[in-house]
Image 1 (cartoon, helix red, strand yellow):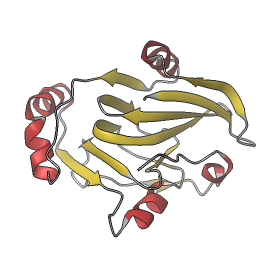
Image 2 (tube, helix red, strand yellow; image 1 turned 180 degrees about the vertical axis):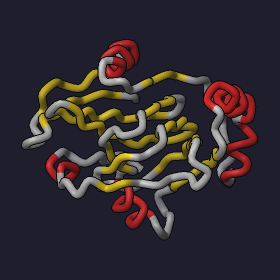
Image 3 (cartoon, helix red, strand yellow; image 1 turned 180 degrees about the horizontal axis):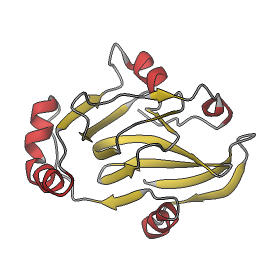
Length: 182
């Protein structure tokens, strides 16, 4: 279930309790320039690779490509038994920004985006069907959860794809991690 919880960035205490009302979530996130939408989902086969994910959502990807002129689109599928799961989680857990908008469509599973703005941290647990757009320059991080289970389509205007500029702030260690059931 998609949820939004707001924390104080100084100490990680809860500033606003979680809500799963998608309209409230989208409205609150719009106030900090984060786009949140729900898209229809399609089932993936158990062994679907990145190419299969992209083919399954080709129409939606084409529509977004035409609207935003993306030059790179890829898909990541991280399962609980992935040999690099711990390393992937650590990589994304440090606060960073991008010189590119970060747009993700969750086709399966879940993960948590954390957005830091004006002394608050917004934790958005994204689930299947969620599209989130984090504008360039926005301080954020992503938690895959332990164990990880998600598949996302990622969109880039940068031909190199995902490139982070790490802030060096340890705020991600002060706010509760995202843990999920396998």
